[in-house]
Image (cartoon, rainbow, N blue to C red; front, top):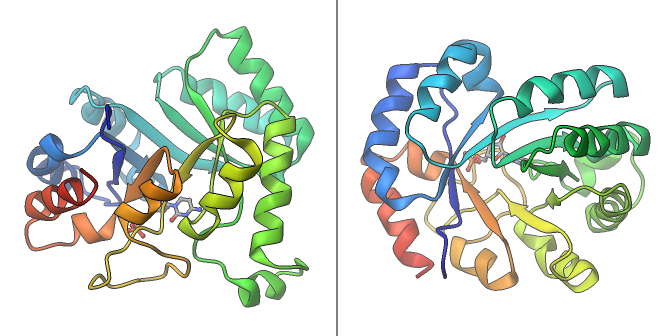
Length: 230
Ligand code: C5P
């Protein structure tokens, strides 16, 4: 395996905690994912500080709004040159296509990644919000829409990797959270699998948060994850 595919989700509201954790885990990870918890507390200054580690950055804000708002927000995000950033595929084709167009206009290398079904969802929680069918079926439909609109990849749970790979081969990058070893707490994740299996099934990158960041020693935990996929 050439590049380390482990992106650690630094979900904290405290820049000092983020700094401490990243210092410990940097040798064992391939990139850093910053999301809403970090951004709503540490802001742009926090992102700029973490960017100094010079590790590939994944800005995960899961944009979902009207096309104009999403496009303008994406323009701001692309100015940080992240390797990956996320939009909800359920925002619809017009929103996705305008974002793909913007990326071309700006000559950006950022991978636009579509969130299909959150890994905290199962069939029951999906039906609760009025979506019919199964999670699998919806991941299928949303992945197809992402592909048709020219997105670079999708986020899905480890359970759907093989199906997405079968359908799209290497034409879509597959980003996979919900990574847990057997002894890890699942927390709020419902569709989980180990790092090793997710990579075997064809994930391009895996996102690991709490199993590393909440460990007694984040450095050790990250090293174990790294060893497990070698
Ligand atoms: O702590 P844990 O490993 O569950 O963290 C998973 C990370 O991946 C979180 O930052 C979460 O926002 C993100 N994520 C997810 N499911 C998605 C997309 C992103 O869990 N579908």
